[in-house]
Length: 298
Image (cartoon, helix red, strand yellow):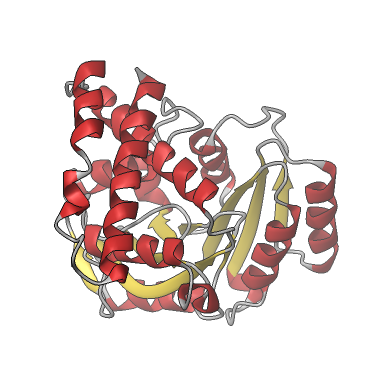
């Protein structure tokens, strides 16, 4: 049985979801002596601190660190957690997520079946009851499953754009994380992309990772405001990744042209059913937001 160090960075305004997250971690059907939870202060507020202190009193395997940086971005906070990790496998989730009861067991079983892999990870999704009626949650699931080739079956991945491996539901062998230098801290704090970059560097060294169909639940308000901000962040992450790898960034004119032409994406759905039209419209809005987000790292 593998030993895990769960690294979790938390910031201000997340006390309620942090409580749900920690509760789900310690409700895992896995021996307490075989895992530790490491919470890193990345701008935590008093309410969040009270939540951590409560769980510390109840669970000896919870450790809390406050480096005094404030909100410096997820990469630096997670790298600090990796250095403090005492176990063979480092798992990651976020302070607005709930992990399932068999989370660590599923990761452990993956490493047992495939001891050659460098990491094991699953996927992120809205709560089941939200997915039933919320178009934003449904779109997000459609986008994730299609982009990353998610299936109901496990598979070995050797490519960056295959399997999510986002830091809300992943684990890696600590020695591999140390070998590649952990997360790239140069990614802007507001941008996504540092987790995809980490996976790219790991598989670039010839390692394989295992996707297992294990769902972590995202505790979010699935409304338009969040949807827009999430797409802005994705756009910023795309530009940050391109900038790192020396790839050409689009000019302002090119981005504006893309935005103006984006309506053609959903025109073909105008006479189809309303559900298809809504998805196509959201796809266009998401596309526009990503282009706007790219300006953030110019």
